[in-house]
Length: 376
Image 1: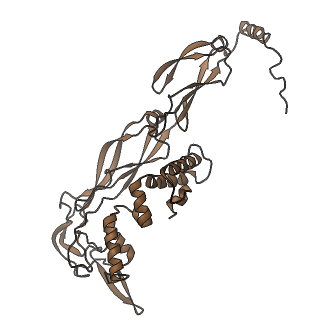
Image 2: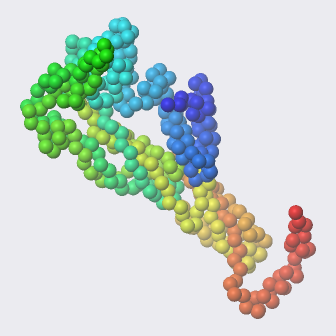
Image 3: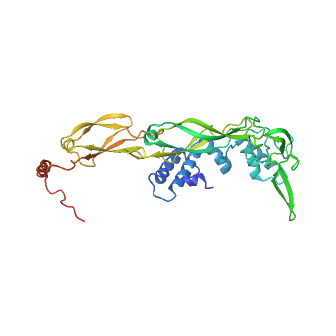
């Protein structure tokens, strides 16, 4: 995995202002709605994920201390320090039995089959039993919203499938719990091969260290079932296409009293028939009559916040832009963007002879030829 500081192109001593500035530059460069680069969407997600960690002082501190391990699901800094201290005081492997460093960290993050058993008790070298609160798994989903919801924020309904404790067995997995005879409760099998010893996960109990006399048929002994849920979630104003929202506590249910995981929601935005988005700004083409463009007038136009009256300057040209300050996209840490009206004078369809005669009269008022100086 690439270093998060390298992804944003900032030194490890960078302050929050430098991190925000680097993120804005890269997010604009790789935004899927703007960039033409082949891997733009992947790079945009990578930059967003790096910014999410480094902009959070607590998560940044953990990353500086533990590196990539701190990014794993359910990371526990206190337990990581305990294991590191134990490693330092007892040699390269205080647990014995061929347990690897990955397995030690796996116990911190709730990975199945680590030194901590399925029931939350340590198996390997410590005499005392340690209760482990396992954080639930993160889940991924996607939602499609219209541009107005992205501009102003709103709520959407999600259909998700969430892992939860099995109600039939109260998450136990079965009845008649007993020590696994194959691994004798260790969750690991040591095998000799070619003069070397290899430690592998016990197939009989899947590393849990125990089996059941009767497995729960509802969850096949896992203690977990997947439940379909319908829930309403809030979409913040100013969300961008391809952005991943981290909805805390809406992921899989935790174990041992641990917190639920997060729901990682990827946002897709439908294009709007009238509005175009450029970062925090919006553009909208507004048709006007020739008379309104020549003499100037007041017209009513729609905006995301409702209708407003706009003054058209006399002699307005095709493509002329009028700025409505603060009528664009809302932003959490910056001023709201602007709405730009692009004037488009409308010509009559199938003009009558009278209309053509009037057009010739208008031509007579032009000073010079309109294409004078037009050459390559």
